[in-house]
Length: 347
Picture (cartoon, rainbow, N blue to C red):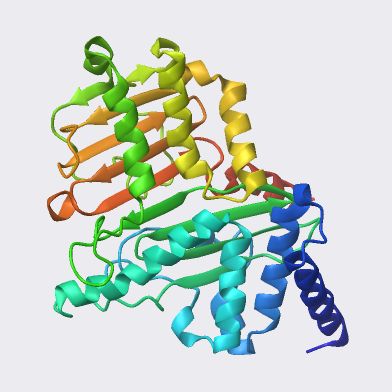
C-alpha cells in the first residue's frame, strides 16, 4: 500500500467514525457516508479481492444485473462468503450507507431468507446461501468524482451512482421475498415486504366501484414483473387510475405506497425521488392492479408516473413469492451521467 493510499484509507476510516457519531451535516449524509464506507471497504481488501470487487465506472459490468439465483445468472463482484469478518462488517456498512434503517433491515432480512428457503427446499433445488451476495465498486469513490457501487444477489439488486457529491441515481432497486410470508418455524408470520403489499391493497380497497373499473386492469395477474431485468424500459399500458381521479384521502394512500419504496433509501435519496415525482406532477401518477383483491391470492400492481415505474408481483409459489422493483425511465444506472462522463473523457 503506497503512502498516498494509506493516507486516503486513514482519512476515510476517520471520516466514517465521525459519521457514525453524527458529526456530519444530515443533508450531506448519504454521499459523504457512501464515499467513506466505500473507501474503507475497498481499502481493507487484499489485491486479489480488489480484482473481484472493483471495476471502471464505464465498464459494461455496471449494467449487468438480475434478481435470480447465481446458478441461473453468473455474477461478478466480491461475495460475502469470501470476506473476513471485519471485511463483512465494512461491506454491510457500505450497504447501510445507501439505505434508511428500515431499508437496511429489509434487505438484510431478504438475504437471511435464504436460510429459510434452504430449509423449505431441503437443498434439492439450488445452493441457497445468505453469504452469496456480491459487492462491487465502480470507479474511485470520491466526494467530487464520478463513481458507483452495487450490491446484488438472489432477490437483491441495488445500484447507486454518484457525481460531484450528489447521488444522481439509485435505480434499479429490486427487492424480492421468498417466501413472501413464512408459514412455519420460529419466524412464522414474517413478511419482509409486507409494507409494500399492504399499502397497495389499502389503496385498491379504498377505491369505489367506478374507480376500480379503471384501476383493476385484468382479473389475472402476470407471472412476473413485466420489465424483468430489461435495461431500457418504457411506460407500461394501460395506466390504471390516475391520482387526479382520486380523492385526497386516496392520494394520501398512494403516497404511502410510494414511501414504502422510497423510504427504504436514505432520507436525502428518498427526498430526491419524491421531489422528481412532484415536479413531474403527482396528478400524473397512476395506480394499476391485476388479479383478485383478497390477501393470499395471486396479484400484481404498478405505480407509474412520467419519470418512474414501480412494479410488484406476488404470483409465484402459489402467491407466496414477491418480486418488486423501482425503475427510472431515464435515470437507471445514471445512464445520462455515463454519457457525460464518456464525453468528457474524450477531451
